[in-house]
Length: 370
Ligand SMILES: *Cc1c(COP(=O)(O)O)cnc(C)c1O
Image 1 (cartoon, rainbow, N blue to C red):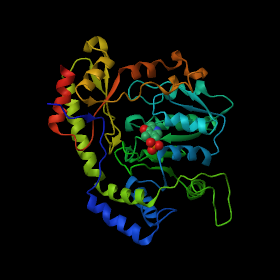
Image 2 (image 1 turned 90 degrees about the horizontal axis):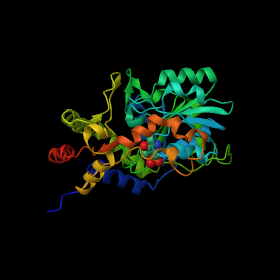
Image 3 (image 1 turned 180 degrees about the vertical axis):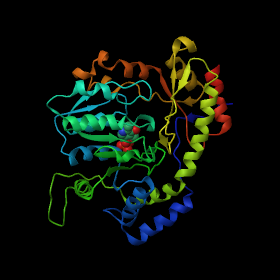
């Protein structure tokens, strides 16, 4: 008998009946996009839900990143991490900004703040860190450096929806944070994204830029783009908010089983808990293979899982700095990024999603033990 395929994630969708009610309203009103009623409602409800001041919704997370850089007029060089999804660095490239990679710290795989200062030049205008796997960067230290050198901070918070640090949303740190609501993320509008901002003027500027730069019927204030979220996405988002907490609770249960089972396996480790964290979202469940102790390399295990229809993903391998576009950069040199390099060779993200069944979790664990 062929075993069912288990993928690294599976999108959580609400009951179709709930969505059909919203779709009927869209069909009746014929308002499909351009800051429609569901778009406005979702911006308001999401800001409340997350505990942030302003949300601007986007068609996807990459456009949110591209636009965030434009909003703050970032130019020259930006300090970023090679250990992320490739869109983080692509957003710089599309803005003709030179990415400068710094290494990560080995505990949570986030940008190492102590490596930032050495990478600053007169051309540096901003820092673009990523809250990898939803664990917060060292935000206080990063802000301190940014203040000293007069730099902006934009967080790629695509992994950090809902996450709190010391009782406040992680999205309240930095000048701007961007989110992704892609199908693979715990909160999804199929495609979608957002920029979180902290004052009304910035929110206004973001909203101009995502709508071609229009600031009125005949006034165009900048070369904006079209990155608006449509009403079908926004309506889905309104329903997803209602189901979010129960979905995360189911993810948490999967993660708890993984954590206790992995303690029994020599040579495979998980991330440590983050003590100051609230409302963790369990977006990924990365494991790290120590080849010597485990007796098998990461790729051997990865392929063994694959042959048994379990499709983990090597997030993040290869490093962004190893792709052809970026590998020629001075900061992409291996000796500059030794920790990121090492971790990217050891990581596999295990399947995690609300509907993952206990017998499927057991199947995965048996495979890791065999
Ligand atoms: C998902 C993701 C993005 C891109 O978001 P899209 O909505 O797919 O465009 C950017 N950065 C990180 C770290 C991501 O995980």
